[in-house]
Length: 218
Image 1 (cartoon, one colour):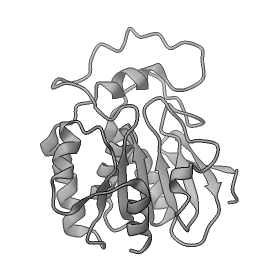
Image 2 (image 1 turned 90 degrees about the horizontal axis):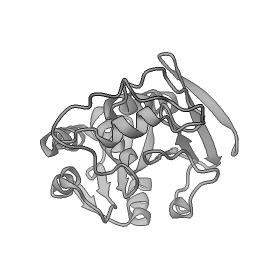
Image 3 (image 1 turned 45 degrees about the horizontal axis):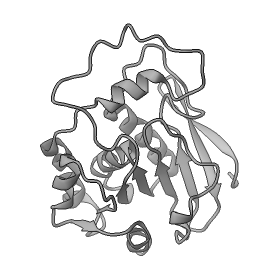
Image 4 (image 1 turned 120 degrees about the vertical axis):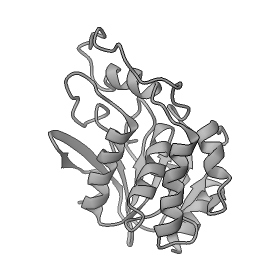
């Protein structure tokens, strides 16, 4: 695939749009967008230093990916989206913003053999929801409009993110990754789950350009 093109990766019945933003040599950089966003049309200036190709995933219910009927969104569904794309790419480094940062953490712990570094950045949906499960979305009417799906906006903004759950994925990445520093926190705003992640000794506190330089050398 060439820069400016889009291919589709199948995740169950969902067609996930994978946008090729820039060509390059070496390991791909996978961008995971924030809540209610989509992959940008071109590679952001913040990743200009990455030597390899740059691609971006539109999560389920966002951008050019499938909008499922009836909602049922969770961060784990988005993690499965990312897992399908990581499997398609073979291996990659991941940059996530907002809810994409949380998904980047989950996939870094879930696939430490394939995700060679994950950078967690500020963006929409980084905070998550309260202590209870999401419910009561059945009465929400979906307008006849393009994504983002309003079910996704409601359910994912209330997604529960306990710090101890997040730390499970940090421990998995730290113990099984092929790199000594598998996660970098680049976000300024740090809700409790992200503050706990940042305190782990295997997690670096870096700017995004510095994190990409670290992961590119891995």
